[in-house]
Image (cartoon, rainbow, N blue to C red):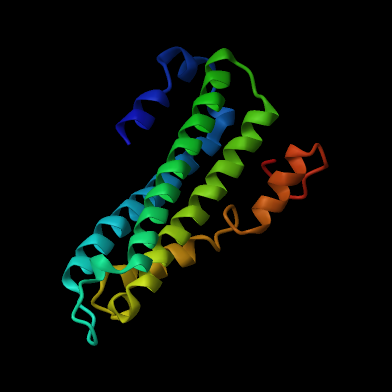
Length: 181
């Protein structure tokens, strides 16, 4: 998170001239960064839950369950790749901000990366939640809270699945139907 904060700090000159104010959308980096953090928490919590869970029929640890292992690997890949894609798109937009340019391609990629990150985190939380069975379904389970939180956040107006439709339209040079593309 520190890397993002350093890369996106407005210089005094940019604050004085007003350049960068039109890029208010960088606020959304904060929102998605929190969701990426929730994805990381879900990965760590699923490791803890898997180590503590044993099958009632075989007495084998959940860490030996191939579905749990697959869910953990997918979650790691989803969160890591979403984070990298988001940082790359933010970096491209920020370079344009510093140069005084506003490229619509970079803006579109940022919006797509933002939406993708929200959905990748939802999938990253859902995988271990399902693979661990009822372990995640208890109200006392951190996985239950994470599952509810990330499922709710993909319903925000800027992260709904229809954001992918607008982003795809903008990438294909069609007239986007959603604001911000």
